[in-house]
Amino acid sequence: MAFDSSPTLVSLAATHDVATVAVLADLSQLPVRDAVADLAVACLSLQDVDDLPGAVREAARVLVPGGRLCLAIVHPLNSAGRFAGDAPDSAFVLTGSYLDEYRYSDEVERDGLAMTFHSMHRPLEAYARALEDAGLLIETIREPAWPDAHHLTRGTGWDRVPMFCFVRAVRPR
Ligand SMILES: C[S@@+](CC[C@H](N)C(=O)[O-])C[C@H]1O[C@@H](n2cnc3c(N)ncnc32)[C@H](O)[C@@H]1O
Image 1 (spheres, rainbow, N blue to C red):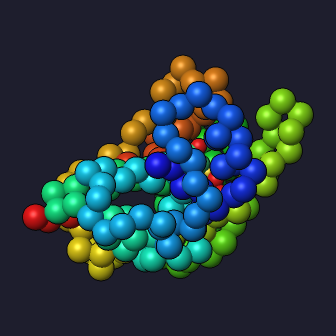
Image 2 (image 1 turned 90 degrees about the vertical axis):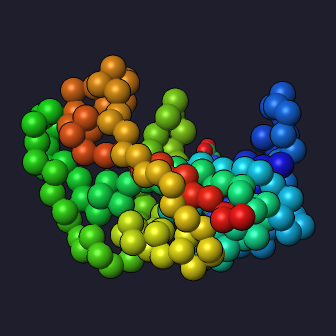
């Protein structure tokens, strides 16, 4: 099952030929019984939820003992700053406080469609604490370099600064 709180995205997902069922739900109130899932995946959603501890607690609740939560988030370094210029060697500048939590928005345009993404900047520790408080143990953290060949980032500094952060955590047996 896949969950999203956006009715538009859930109904669009239902039109795709995929094996999973898309369900309208808040990640901090999953319509799922306790301890039924081997794997929970949160793909680029936890930096957008209002209630991070609640969403992680719910993921932990539905996992079986030994089950894992794999999550990808916008890297907190990315959301705390920006490159000073367009050159590949431009300085990356922290524009706000890394340690504080605050809302921010990104304006993106694709194929003439303008979109606004509303997110929360949270330091990495906020994610670690949410996992700890939910009883999950972090197994791995990865900060992948964005491939230089990618058309969105080619010739930029994103091979020096992590755009995303991946975490795998386990519910102990
Ligand atoms: C950046 S998009 C990622 C969408 C998708 N997971 C993907 O990887 O393409 C973030 C998604 O999180 C969803 N979202 C934000 N807060 C949520 C919440 N509290 N419960 C469920 N979904 C939420 C948004 O509706 C949005 O679709």
